[in-house]
Length: 352
Ligand code: NAD
Image (cartoon, rainbow, N blue to C red; front, side, top):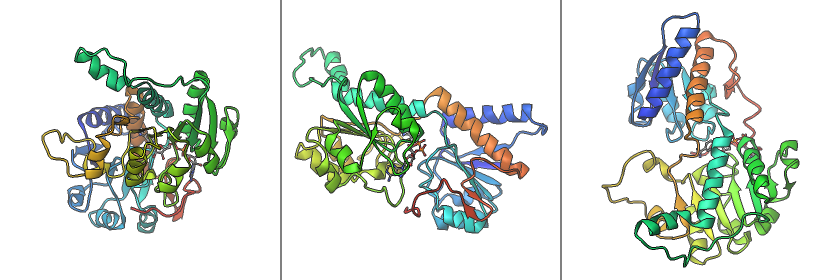
């Protein structure tokens, strides 16, 4: 099969090529699939580069609304392989109508993301990012670096799927009290903490960490109203999807000092910024630049997943999904099947 791989960074090329070679070595077909790598993202402008490909392989900031899916179908593409868990960037209804195969990598290392969320919590809380810079300048003053002992604090986990539960397990080790909100509660979290309604979680938590998917119903779940429900001085951590947080409202809450700190691994307009070097440019996103002015804001460029183990599993699972498509056998990671959207798409229609 011919695969056009978009948003393919050097590490994607290395790990996918390795997984492809291993697949052809272990499977009955001795020919590896042909991977064509494009560093740029898939969009209406670049879709023609997929001509001749059987499948496209895409990442979080490749946006596939109906028009792009139709264009892909027109140039002969029949499969969309997501190298990520979230699928808010693909119009699955349109894909279903076109009969396209769409599969994701539902779990590649929930611990990698959960551990990164803990790193963000503690960096923001204990201000080690500021201490690092100070000490390098020969400034050993502790003024302004005071944090709070995490043990005994309440952490609110919004979304207790694989990552939310992995986070809760780690934070139990820190001695935190855990609250969670999820419309689909599980025993895995009940063993670690208490399910409450979102308003109570917001009112009682010292740290709120977001781990629900981005859907029409969760877009801007953190907005002016819900920020107002949060405890004064509480900190917000988002390692899920940027658009869960209304950036303008969060800026207001930081200015009024109601919100005590913000750590983002994802940002609602990250598509035009993340995974590229813009260091020699004038960044035009004023909201993003305003966020950069706060000493209690920490932003990373969507790297919570980025461990050797997770990237290996992403590549291998993507190739397994491709093999299922190529061999026309049922794929357990298919998001659209036989004209029916799968049950695990419990959310409302995508809004892009
Ligand atoms: P998951 O599907 O295992 O869990 C998601 C949970 O969210 C489910 O329990 C679901 O019931 C719950 N949920 C749905 N709607 C909700 C709502 N309105 N309020 C609260 N909870 C709700 O997913 P996961 O593997 O735990 O991943 C969670 C999210 O993390 C993904 O959707 C993805 O966007 C993000 N993610 C980010 C990175 C990164 O590198 N930053 C990496 C992987 C995943």
